[in-house]
Length: 119
Image (cartoon, rainbow, N blue to C red; front, side, top):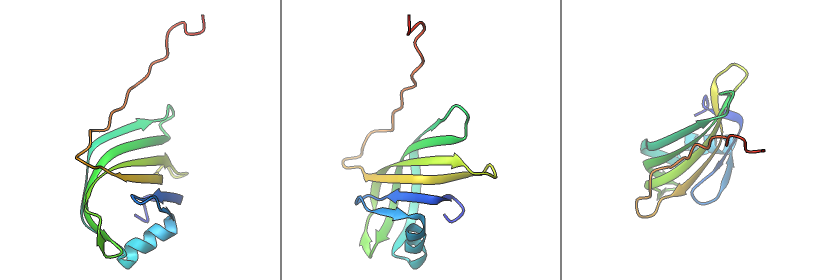
């Protein structure tokens, strides 16, 4: 995760707690947050026109503990990504919300500019 997170990465976790990059990495390294399995499905990716930034929405399913308590389950996760100066993709922000009752796949609607919208 050290290689994936951007320098000013911020996470809003499933409890609404905000963590900086340093806090998130410390929690993972210390074992305060521990994953035994982790997977993504229903992945949606939207890029900016220059393809230098992206928003991801996905369903994450994992078995994990935080502060010794189970946080197993399905979550809807949103990520904000951008290319750094070297051209590598880095995640700068993420947010997770527990899905109650299974949830629906992420849906995105592509909007096209209307012809003659200003006439």
